Image 1 (cartoon, helix red, strand yellow):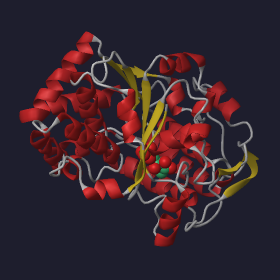
Image 2 (tube, helix red, strand yellow):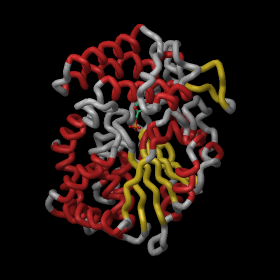
Image 3 (cartoon, helix red, strand yellow):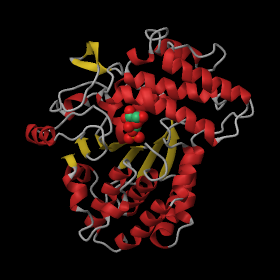
Image 4 (cartoon, helix red, strand yellow):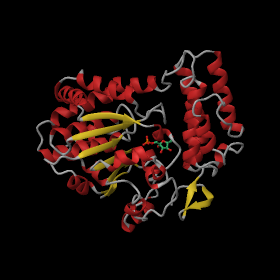
Length: 399
Ligand SMILES: O=P(O)(O)OC[C@@]1(O)O[C@H](CO)[C@@H](O)[C@@H]1O
């Protein structure tokens, strides 16, 4: 391994849980640098009042110098978090599992700015200005224009291009432009894949069957738009009869998609000229017809692996022909946020998942499984930060 990582002394099922207490590790950097910077960005983005500024000061102080504090007892999810965090309250943020600490940070940030609560800032998404700016940006404009070139491409080329666009949208600096090359997909996009089970994915969704697909979204904007375009392709070309799109119930990990973001993306598509506009129109109708349904669940913001999903969510996924999980965080929750051996089989670690499951993810944290030994050797020899820099991606599928 080329990067430093921190390990919990307690292994879960044979692999160390990732903590953030190793200076220089990726997880440490997120807590020590990314979270304080985020507090500042959110503070600068709104004309918050004194109350919010004081709460943000206190949160910054706590994550920097203090120990993990409980939510206020009047908060509606107090009991739930008190239970999830009972081993960690009173300890340094850096000594809690990385996944737990990140999740709880976002929850606390929402209390600090009044998103959760009963005051005037209730429901004001602290990340909305960043999401909006992205959606209005030139990059999205260009990516939507690139759809025109794909409109009349042979169906299989279009399918590959749109799958890759959805995948690389998770990096949010590539997208359609990388996928709209002559053959429908670029060499760069393909060679950066550390695992590619896309053939299995398409086998699970042959055209003309009555498949139901669940898509668990990740980021809004530049990721959600290509996700929606892929969903349109699945519905239009008979790969799916119905699609359920799962989004977060509250703002999370900066740009994670909520229902409001789906609406914004659909509006952006419908207002665009050409193929993008046509896709937007079809998706809008699909929502009304119920062939595309947006769903959410509080579990999507829980600091837990999918293995601990509640029964109602399990039933929803079990009824899908295939569940597609987007992004890095979903991957960490799918296989467990642990330092598995990179060749540990993806199928074994996801055997618990109710039904066939696909992960579409750019690599942005230390967790990785399901690699061939040869591929791993090549990556390790490269000396690059391939696990965390977002330069590599994977499509892993378990039938
Ligand atoms: O799920 P995403 O959007 O692909 O990635 C989210 C993510 O990269 O951001 C965090 C850093 O803040 C990582 O820990 C985490 O996995």
